[in-house]
Image (cartoon, rainbow, N blue to C red; front, side, top):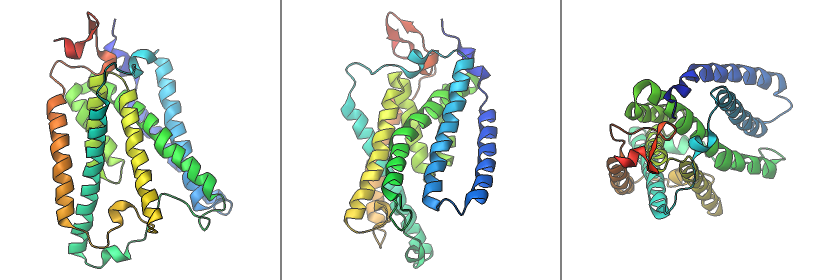
Length: 292
């Protein structure tokens, strides 16, 4: 029997309070130890501790509501079209690249010299940043490609989606959880679209494993883009590699990716009677969302 009130006891506002206290403590530690650790080590350590805090908060709540992990996480679906998964992930990445190129074009129109003044950025640390650069890069890679997708999918598509569904219904929960996800990323529009796609993947497949894998592929490709950039001896990400933003390239990327994403969302948008995986019942071995 499905108990849809299970997530009523999960209070998202308490997580917000935990995060605020975490930032206060970390700022205090930074001030106290700024002469002992450099920026690279602090950045990597902060990321690991931050995801550790969120993981502990979730596990604590899961224990309190006696979560059924098998139903919550789900299982690898049989006969799943993995090509479609790769297609939609690549479409989201292309959309983000297009948004980045468009943003740079708008900035260049407003102030032609501003792009040259922006500091170069890289996902990788160098010996100039820290003597522990190889180890810091390894930890940063594990955080970005392994830990972040797992923790963020559990939190946004798992906890928050179910909590908001209990409160507002599935469609509003999909939009609200995606908006929060977007606000917490620098590329708001790209992250918001990405979150919508991840919600649909979770709802359609009834397993967090699929969006986690998609999230890992997305982040892995971001690192791959940076590696290619470094090979070309450019210490900026791909979207910032071109000195002259091209509105035509931006329009092409956004159009191609937009068509694919729109079709995916239109075809798979939750029906009025659908529920997120943990609230779904099974009839004759078929998910409630697919039975009717």
